[in-house]
Length: 230
Image (cartoon, rainbow, N blue to C red):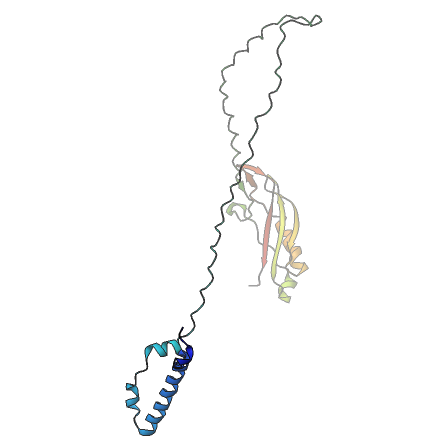
């Protein structure tokens, strides 16, 4: 049996983390030396072992997101109609041909025929109303006919001296024979002497009587008398 005291002692093994730390420290020392020596561009050529940096700088892996549950789809609600039941059968009435013992009996008589419709009789239109009578032709009395020869009214002498003038009008009622029956003062001249002289004149004149459809008729006539000094 071989004794362990004779074996040489094993060299201590460096751990992997110690190697990474020593490499990073060496990189920083080299970078500081390059900055001090003006060799910044040469520092880019320094190659860091990919395996060392990847293990040292590798970020932690993100956790997977929880799965999103699917959105439930709403099913349309279908309304079902209640079944309609048919109506219950109704009892039918059955006619009994046997007559009742106390039913009255009678004789059915046929309805008399309708009377014939008479033909319409044409009605003659009513006769037109009679035409109204023609208006009667009226001729008023007159006092200025040439054949009457009525004298002029007598001008009162005192009225001439005083210079009285005017017009007097009398309404004279003329009979069918042309003679005056009455006279009414219609307009005064403003002087009693002239009005009185006019009344005496119109009652002494003769007139052409008024006529209605050619027949002499008593009518009223307005007789004017003008008093003018010449």
